[in-house]
Length: 203
Image 1: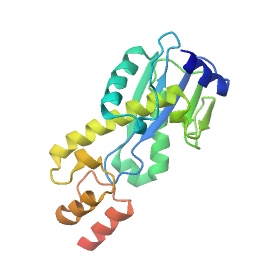
Image 2: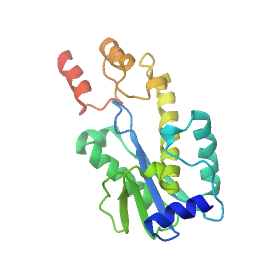
Image 3: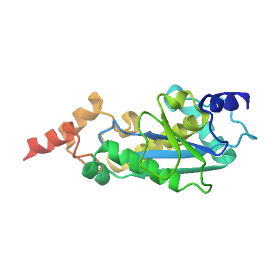
């Protein structure tokens, strides 16, 4: 509990503060997923950190604990079609807006990972590297990452051969070779340069 209080004190924000983070800006396919979390100071969660710094096993355990102990949480997204239509930055901000709007408790303040805050009616600020500095943002990063990872593993079965369960849609060598061999799927982001180049080469 002291860790949570110390980190929140750094930003001098109200107790009903939501942390917001996104996962999936870099991948060539799949939705961008966001989460918003209001933690309960009376029910501290040990070990919250940037989801990328945690093992998969630890993320999975924290995913369940966050959902059990948080005062409120919401997981939201922007689709591949929305990413292609309005660009990944705007789609990420839209998904963040949806996550906060979906909370069952209206936050008094919102802390957003990164350097941009969506246009919304909430008092808010962006926190660079917030997922390793603010527990509520760390919790949001865990919910978003576990959700998106699970979806990419499921999509690996729908689109076999691309290795999505392993690279989660990121432009790895395995993924790029699969694109060359198998072509572009409906879940690939056509506005992304490697995918767009692949489509143009097929014409």
